[in-house]
Length: 127
Image 1 (cartoon, rainbow, N blue to C red):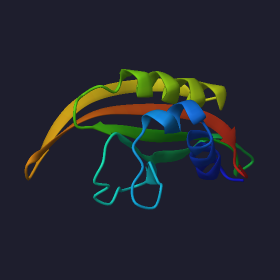
Image 2: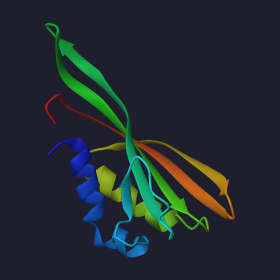
Image 3: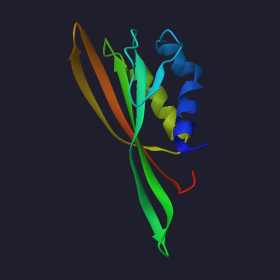
């Protein structure tokens, strides 16, 4: 299982997290890269924003640093319980938290309040 699959599985397998997220028509609440118009909130959107060599020996990459960005998308700004659970899950996978940002976006008649969190991990090149 690669690192993207591990993160997706860990987020989806948390009963605490999935209980506080809204499911779409297909029962999804965690999306990779882009969420379709889910129609209900809060949801999570995650993506890899950086995957760079960290350790190179004899012209061979030995270790890499992977940074994930997770958007907690809400319509009411109540993302703290979700943030706490996402952080617990990601730290449990061996990630460290890098930064957080809060943004608001106006889309048609809907205002989205989004907490953006970046996590980084060092892993072997085959993970």
